[in-house]
Image (cartoon, protein in one colour):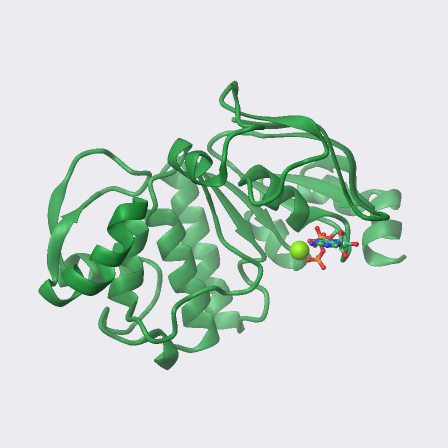
Length: 260
Ligand SMILES: Nc1ncnc2c1ncn2[C@@H]1O[C@H](COP(=O)(O)OP(=O)(O)OP(=O)(O)O)[C@@H](O)[C@H]1O
Ligand SMILES: [Mg+2]
């Protein structure tokens, strides 16, 4: 599905990525793990085009993405969340979901300032961006929020949400965006057990629906519960790959990742 080939990236003297080659397989959950500073987020930034690699290439379903700008990659189906939650505090959940679902550049302001008051609009009814259109309503977003375990009205302002609810909203947004692959940077970092259980259910459900998901995660218990495949990074390199069980048994991984 997604293939990174010999990616190098340095920030001044810091070699963040030193020849990373990996493949993310379709219709499963891949976990990218590794200690702080291993280069995980840098790799996501390069995959979604936020930063350019010094050398190396990136392919999505055999199409070379390396020189495509970020917004074109998003249109091709690369959808991601950020390590730090990035939302507009003074907009509602409805506004955010609306923006995510219909995220053409020219529509963003229209979505916020015109359509949010009307409560009815065109949208993609299916996750993964089926091109079919529908007339969606507040009820549509209530269902979306329900699916993602957010028990609040779509009209709730983001500033009134808990941290966990913001993480869930971010997840709902990214999966509403038309996409082929979801890249999630630390989806359960800082959330309580209840929210973590919601996120676990949501991710497993998305996988059952045929989604391709790659998560960066430090919580190995969580990784063991949901990941089909694990890629371990350390100091800008891929250290090893395998099932969560296999990598956790590996001596090199324990040394690099857990300091044992
Ligand atoms: N914009 C930047 N400018 C300078 N150095 C950077 C920049 N982004 C990342 N780095 C450095 O590159 C290395 C890899 O960072 P990265 O954020 O990719 O690690 P990570 O594996 O995501 O770590 P964490 O688990 O802490 O999120 C680190 O040494 C980091 O300090
Ligand atoms: Mg990171």
